[in-house]
Length: 241
View 1 (spheres, helix red, strand yellow):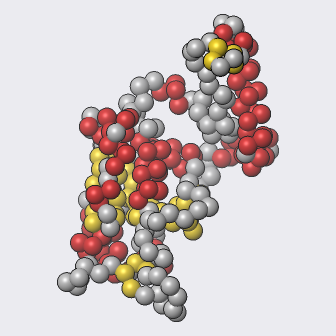
View 2 (cartoon, rainbow, N blue to C red):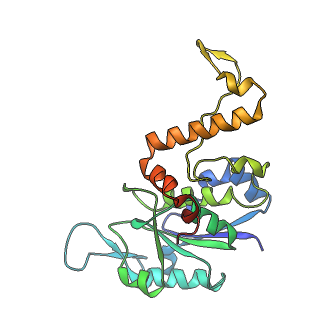
View 3 (tube, one colour):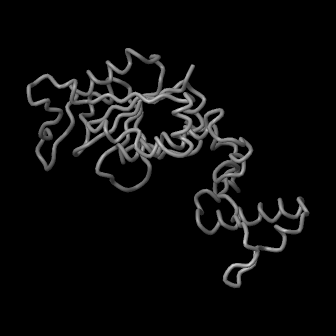
């Protein structure tokens, strides 16, 4: 079964966007994954195709209506397996990580809801058992850029998308660490040499150097990751839900 991404959005023209290029775009053209977009406005019931209303309790901005979004979700589920993950992109969600990307890649697809306005009526998120995911501690104008980022991280993990699967094994987060520094020709650039160990041909030394640099980088740049790594969180991280 082909891995399928369903995207519920007010701006279907934003897709595939960057996903139509490079590895993801080639994989899409080759049929390694499918993309379906649903325009949430198509499920509005009034002539103005209204999808939002003022917040209950007052306050600025508008909120996406539960009834409209529920109809869009239900329509999406008619063409998908009931157990397909249903994900809402929101700053309030659980932080998205490589472990969750792997889980999604092992499934048969995902349905992503792109929010807009001040948020979405909480009742529909609860009634439809929607998983809330965040890319980080910042706010975007809408969920579409976040959905593209999530899909890109998952699609590259699908079988056949990356030409050499071994290329995925040394990436950041694969062993609970950030990736080691990379170098290529020319040998000397602006007076800076490629580290001698990388041109030594000694694979044991190279592996040890890369491990050391990955640990140094993680300890310096991501103390949270380093704490989990030294505390035994490397194995637990891949099991978290």
